Image (cartoon, rainbow, N blue to C red; front, side, top):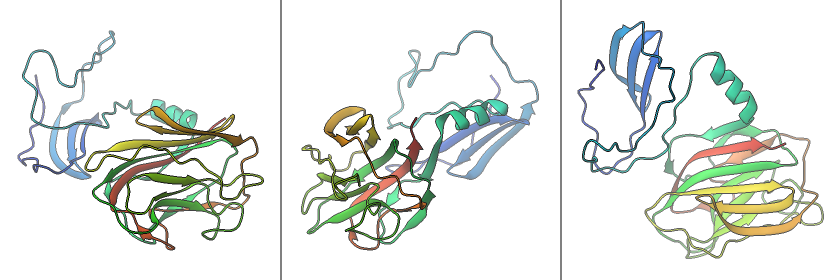
Length: 247
């Protein structure tokens, strides 16, 4: 029953990323990326042979008054490198923050089959096209590779407008009918593979287009904006943006 108890109290009504790491003979606890507790008594941590069950929360105590998500268990060392190679993805944005115009976050190599995922939490609506994110080889509109994909809010709504370039349609896409709930996180996944574009909200299929037998595969690296320089940003917080090349 050894451990480490940070002195800091978690702030109410704000997300805190908590990381507990047992490695190098230590137990380290981080809030965000800041070390808040360390215990050096872990040269010989317990390694049970049985599989370890995970409860959020457990059956022996009353649950804490809190919302919890993005729970991850990672084996450190050589195994984590194998997992990364098998996943083949790239995390573009981790922290969930308000969208900001012309925020360049990096670049990716395009693939014929790919998947873009992100968390989004709208807090309102606004007039005109409001950008969420934009993958592009250069500009905004009018050429193949300039929307790979790109996502907006329809004017005065939280409904998503999703475009992705393909042969014969540089501005084709799929627009779910469902509006995103305000003040709640939704995991959005856009998958282009097997001749289709599929859109998921929290793993539930909400839109499908069968026009993607020949999606655009630009030779240039694709720039990623969250949000782009050509539109006002959507009134929302976005994080955990990832691009994954599919086989």
